[in-house]
Structures are given as structure tokens and as C-alpha cells.
Length: 171
Image (cartoon, rainbow, N blue to C red; front, side, top):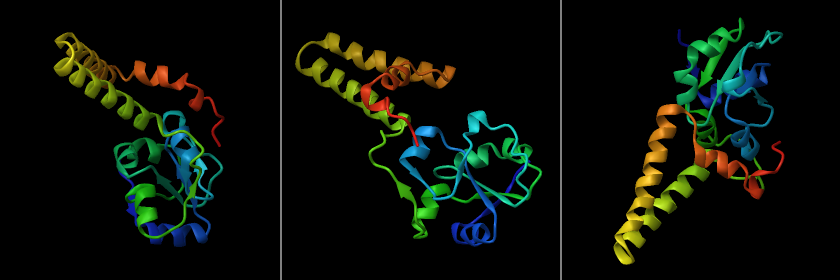
């Protein structure tokens, strides 16, 4: 079951008329950047949105999560519901305001990408410049990424969550 998509400017008009905007992104994403007034209901914890009678507009970062999970979003409400086409990125592209808190850590997915990419590059540089055994570092990180993709559990993300910069309380 799918939900109708709505462009950012049309969504803004609908919100001004009383629609409820629901941000389904993870807490770290919402804390760093959000649309003012959006209610935060992370997708992984979303069950039902009882009590909201007004139309609902769901959004994520770029629209993919909302489209991929349209059936779950539709099942969460009996209200008229839409997907914000292109997510918060389209909202910004339309010139509409967002609240940014750059004091919040980068989103965990981006932290994992930076750490994994850095370790792979380090392994290649050390492997070609110091000793071939360092190529094993790149292989180990690659294997970890494959495991994370297949299992849904990322050891690097769990490790990064323990870092001091990630110990702040999200908004």
C-alpha cells in the first residue's frame, strides 16, 4: 500500500492549515537538523499515531525511507496521510526553513562512513608503503561492513556510540 507524495511547498501550505508533520528519521538525525514543528516518531519505534485527526505528512532525509516503508506508515494512522517528496532535503531546496544544531554530533551513519573509509584508506596506504600485512586492515573493515549490511548490526557504530562526542543528550 502506498501513500500519495506531496511537494514541499504544498506540504508547507497543508501544515499551515493544520496538518501534522512527522519526522521518521533516527534521533541523531533529528537532533542535528529538523523542520520546526515536526513531531519526532522514529521509524524503528513507530506503532500508531492515535489521536491525530488532521492530515499527516511523513518525512525522512531524502524520501527513500518513507517510500520504502509506506505500508507501515499508512498502517500507523487512520488519518489522511502523505509522504513529503524528497524529504527534508527537498524542503531545504524549496527554500523553506530548517532548524540546525551543529553542536550535535554527525549522524551515526556518516560517522561510520568516515571511520570505515579512513581505516580502509589507511590500510591501503600502509600496505603499499610499509608492509603488505596492513592490507588486512582494509579487508577487516570491508568484512565488517558486509556483516553490518547482512545482519543489521554494526560493531563500528556501537563503538562510535561510546565516544565522548556521542554522549550528548539529543534534542
